Length: 269
Image (cartoon, rainbow, N blue to C red):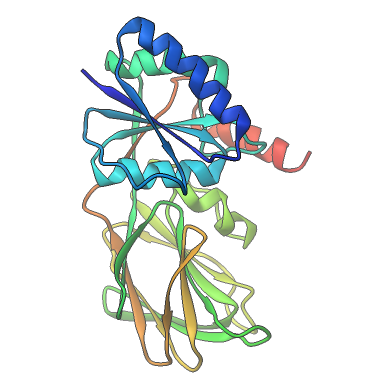
């Protein structure tokens, strides 16, 4: 029998209230469930039978998606934020969506996840994007890029980003990159505030191995908005597709176009 894992921040009283309400319904239905409070609890173990439910905004979803990815679980994103492109489930639909997921009737998208290998800090995963960015305020960083060992471009910029289709509507979109359909097996490379250089994004196959080299100044690696490592000049980070995708449950009427139109309207309200 599947188990439901709710994920929320302790500061989100709306999320905790919804959790309690839905938990009571699950108790009546005999469905096992538990909660993970971000920052207060140790990272939980999940399996392919777990339904991970994110209650909050996009940041909560990214945390929940990494938990789901660790055990090949499904993740449902409930939109309690304002824009919420990553969050296709409305609060009023949560119980129905959980029931559909338990019965195997909820559509699932397989999303690309990035695996990031750093020189000294091992590897990390990112659902949205990885950025090699300047470590020193007021200074650009020169980033040499390689695809499968072949030199691509060297950028003088605030940074260079590698984004998944899931993350393409976030930082990548703000930096001028394209919005990619979430199911595409691709990455997109986008320079951030480049100086006198090509400012267009480049889309590559998700089977590619991308290397970002810090050429002349220290740089930091930021994955899904969190700093993960620092590079000294001459060091590089290697980015490739994780062998495991993240499985995202989405109601049938929440396609890419509908989510994009909604998020763009809300983001510019």
